[in-house]
Length: 207
Length: 207
Image 1 (cartoon, chains in turn purple, blue):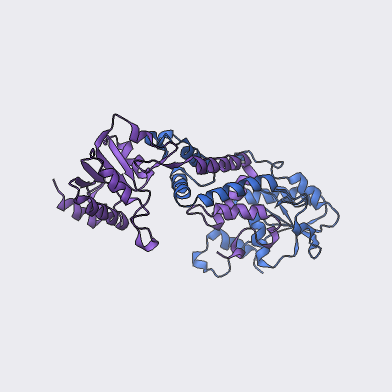
Image 2 (tube, one colour):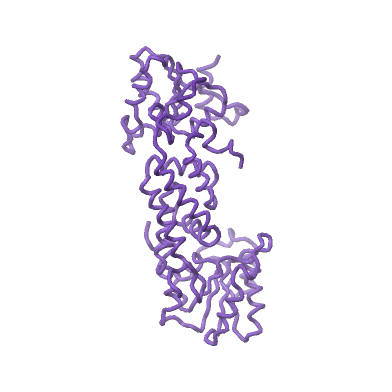
């Protein structure tokens, strides 16, 4: 992005602090120079307390947040509370891409097993390989002797499908049951508006 | 927003730091809980250096940035470099809503006078009155004996027009020339696609 496109061009250049804040905000995903300028203006003009609170939250999170030793999700402890929960079924392991996906599965209330959070997906174009998403750690975790079924709940995108495929290939030899979330017509939808690939999968997987 | 909608619902609740970061990011304008979760994930998983840099930029900006004594824009000095520039014409004063608007006028290269930045606009519904946008300071600034013309470059929105109206009413008695940016058809546009109000104004203001 050219410097000339940014808010703090020449007439504003005597505030390097504003310029630095705009550059800092542009590190956020999905935030371009216009949004960053608007955010910087809002924080400095209307919500300096919010800005200081955000700075403190960023620093605290960077210091405190680590990955769970067992499931790899964000936690502040060595092992997260989900992995430590004795009421959960240790024979089932649900593999998801992100903590947000884990949260979505959890909110259904339909799953009481444990999780493994990849914190990403295979993406050769971006140079994200099996090591970057901790597949070795997943294979080790799945081989703990307790796990009987691994449920692949990666996204139904090209990268998510490829990730699920690589995981299932890696785990097949270990005698585990490998399942995948069912593909089909979303609840509440009308066939007319569902894409054809989804209908085709729902036909093949009919029950 | 209900806590249950946020990313850090029960299974993630052992990371209060992540939850706090999401809440902190939601102070940014235009950022809801989904965007904030995505940003928090990105920063913690892929760009902790960026997160620390943003925290430092926020703190530095809150500490260093103040308002120019003369034009009210963001600066780190008592008076900003634009107001101090001796090559600028002190007889003309352009009134804009925000530093971004000032930057837009400046980038045209068509204006060499000085500015007054309101840092907002009149908005009775949000409780923003004349005092909140420093109109008293503007009237004082415009009455310095040097200013001959005040160019109202507030936005052509309902609030911007109202702000321009209030300013022109306040300055009329002081014998200053008050002008407004011309309304008309944008350069490069086809009449067919221009809204009727704009065409009506362009007809009235034809030259």
